[in-house]
Length: 175
Image 1 (cartoon, helix red, strand yellow):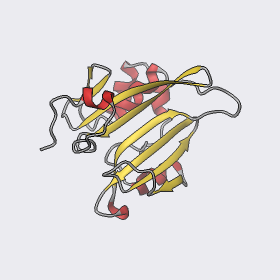
Image 2: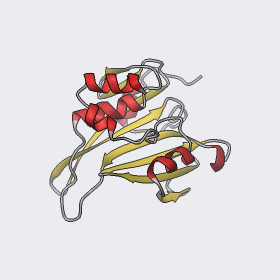
Image 3: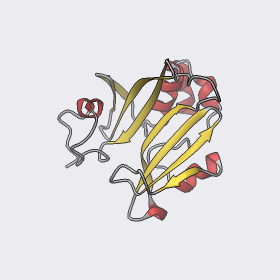
Image 4: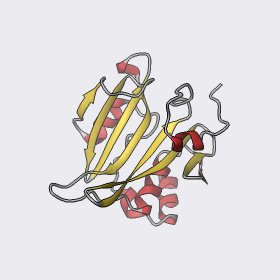
């Protein structure tokens, strides 16, 4: 964990990272590990899950919404393979975008002992086992964003992926 703090300090996100729970729905974490970090999830469902995920849990941590999708033989042994981070909306207020420091912290938490390389509109982990991109949009007239981090195998067989994902995975094959 000390290496994470040093890396995040370099990116200027040490204060943000220090306040994160240890298991911040990072890739490879179990649903139980995520629940221990955040408490009870809401919206835990097997509906509206992107295949090959089996179940999706949503957590709220401070003002960050964390949506993890889990893959495994069954729900009990599933691991996080796709996670979306975005600012949780405040009542009657536009959603604020994640800051550059928060994005750096999210990437560092999902580095899995590797480093991230900026490519196109996103990042590729040095071991080529994970990718990430920043989705930008407008909600109620205000700019917002989300950071989507996923394992390389999550989209490998899905022909209906977004252009952002296709661009990141250009030439990648899980086989």
